[in-house]
Image 1 (cartoon, rainbow, N blue to C red):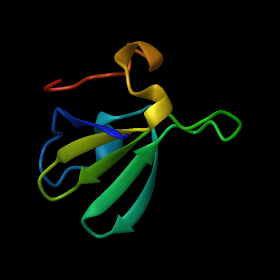
Image 2 (spheres, one colour; image 1 turned 45 degrees about the horizontal axis):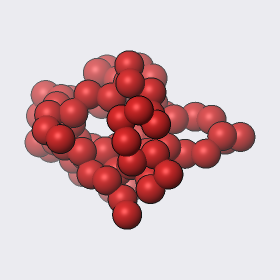
Image 3 (cartoon, rainbow, N blue to C red; image 1 turned 90 degrees about the horizontal axis):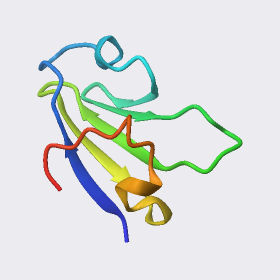
Length: 81
């Protein structure tokens, strides 16, 4: 089962890459961006969906990486568990 984590928001309407220098991104629409790690030869651990108008962010963690211990703990910033 996927794990969902609400992340701290970025300022509404701002460029997500100004606030996140680690992830790559793919624009899905004028209001939505999906951010991800750029390691094509390694399994993807998660995706981050950014709603650009509000700055809200949601991390979708894939089943094999559901625990914080399985992910990079230095990159994980959750508002709630």
